Amino acid sequence: MRYIALRLLGLVGVVLFVSLVTFSIMHAIPGGPFDEDKMPLPKEAKQAILKSFGLDKPLWKQYLLYLWNALHLDFGYSYQSPGETVIQLLTRVWPVSMQLGAMALALAIPIGVLLGVLAAVRQNSWLDYLTTFLATLTIITPHFVLAIGLILLLSTALNLLPTGGWERPQQWIMPVIAYSLGPLGTIARYTRTSMLEALRSDFVRTARAKGISEFRVTMKHVFKNAELPLITIIGPMFPNLLTGSIFVEGIFRIPGLGQFFVTSIYQRDYPMIMALSLLAAMLVTLVYFVTDFVYMWVDPRIKLE
Amino acid sequence: MSQIEGRTVPAPGSAPALGPLRRLHRSQRQKGFWVYAARRFLRNRLANVGLVIVGTLAFMALFAPFITAHHYAEPSFGKAWRFPSRESWLGTDGIGRDFFSRVVYGSRVSLSVGLMAQFISFLIGVPLGILAGLKGGQTDFLIMRTVEGCQSFPRMLVAILIMTLLGSGFGNVLLAISITSWIPICRLARGEVLSHRERDYVVAAQALGADTFHLLVRHLLPNVLPVLLVAIALGIPEAIFTEAGLSFLGIGINPPTPSWGQMVGESVNYIRHFWHLALFPAVMIAWTMLGFTLLGDGMRDALDLKMQID
Image 1 (tube, each protein chain N blue to C red):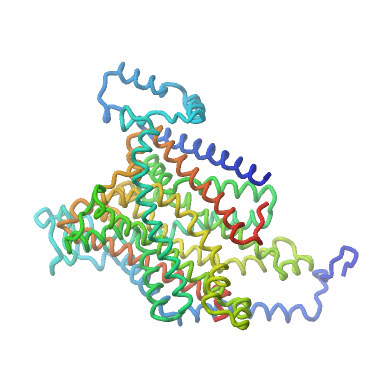
Image 2: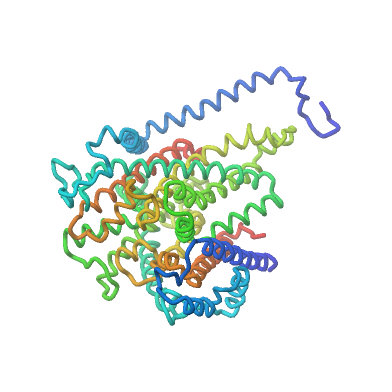
């Protein structure tokens, strides 16, 4: 109980730290959201806008005000999308990214684990070599390179799929593939490695000597022990994939959260930058928190202190 | 011997007859470890492929002016948008710059960013990680909270923020990458030190009266270093990826210096027609990452003690 309380306290600390650093860097960037180049306005009008958003106050006051409002779940208005609160903007665009990420994970986790297990059980077979080759290939290729490759192959050369958009399911195929291959390869590789390690253990030899079927040995004795490193790998994939990617969403023109990581900074959309930073930080911290409990659940030998 | 203090180790002045002999033995074994590792590495076919790829890239980067016929930034408006031909091997870009030259010169950015970013990560991460693992207590708490704080930042968002703040350019790209890339190294160093600290040989050395410095230099570092080296090598592709990503967004390396990521980014709008502008830099990024990954994997297999069972 005390442990959970301490961890939650740590979560609050992380959020405060991230918000403070983001706030400082963001305001250190020269230029503001309502400069001449973005909005040619008379001086008085600009002053009025700045005042209405509280941007005329000293920075420390702005920060405290932001925290106070955030405590009341008021994250302000997004400057780049007039008339929309940050919450409204997020509820509009985030589901798109979540859908893309969820589809990618739904593809990557089962296939990756399956390939890894098969490769380990049949070590040094053609299946093992193929898996290792595919895993290496997909891990090393950045997803924007994969995306470009897919477009070149499936759109430019074969003319099978549209180059972008998000209205029809055909348009989902390439982004989901481009997005899931990297995690898939990573999962397959780690599964293979930790399976191989577990396969060499004494208890596996004992289990086999007792006459337990190979399938049971693989599932109960080997995979059970190979799960732990997998959890370490898969955990952080969730916040990464669910918050969208600037590259994949940009290349395939998907109206998700990814593009806002860039546009918010370019347009000095302060409330949106803060929201994105805090959202990502909370997700990451939360995932580490949950991962530690999953460890304990999977492996009772692990105790948290 | 000072039995009173519970130590059984002889005072430094009175080395027993076994002393020198044992030390010689150990030094031989240490050398053997690296020699055997190098042999295992060279016997590994994939590792050799990695070595050849990285070697070729290094050659390209070092001798770029001798390989290419044109300067990477030399425009030729009459020859814009050419497809690959005998005259210009990889075609030309929108303002007629020889694309082969640009691809070759692009290796300079990728290689130097990858190597230097990981070097910086090593310099920051390893001392901090070892310090946290050895000292424990409040030092550990402080370092680990810093690490947790830093790793909870969304990587790309921080990189973009920093690049927008400081402006694009090589040094700032390095900074934006290293600010987060030292974290896994630090965590690994701490974890390794923690796991070795409890092992029998360290406990024995401590019982024999070894001080922290001796423990660190003679016992912990030699055992921890191989793992850290592998992690450093395997982190190189990640650094290259971040640079390519930033340049892809147009906030990485300043034009006209060519960077593969930047070239891919500029090509996206013309991908339906001028496929060569997207294909070649994209292939080079993947190729470079393949080389370093195979190299790192080979190092891991050659150095990782667990693998010796095979």
